[in-house]
Amino acid sequence: MSATTTELRELDGEGLVAKLREAKEELFNLRFQAATGQLDNHGRLKLVKKDIARIYTLMRERELGIETVESA
Image (tube, rainbow, N blue to C red):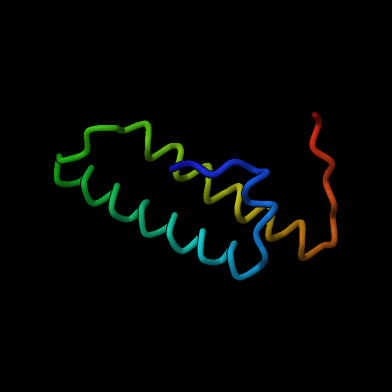
């Protein structure tokens, strides 16, 4: 379940931290499956890593007080 940027922007700080925790847990599980040869969808690893980076970016933007305008 990949989160879009607009969905993430609607979350508060605690919600972002919860999403980050879920994504990191999923990444761990996917890496474990890959190491044991049980992973079917290798593209999911890439998507989860991008979600984690997206969450960190939003958290940093909020920390710096940067407001980004999404193009419609």
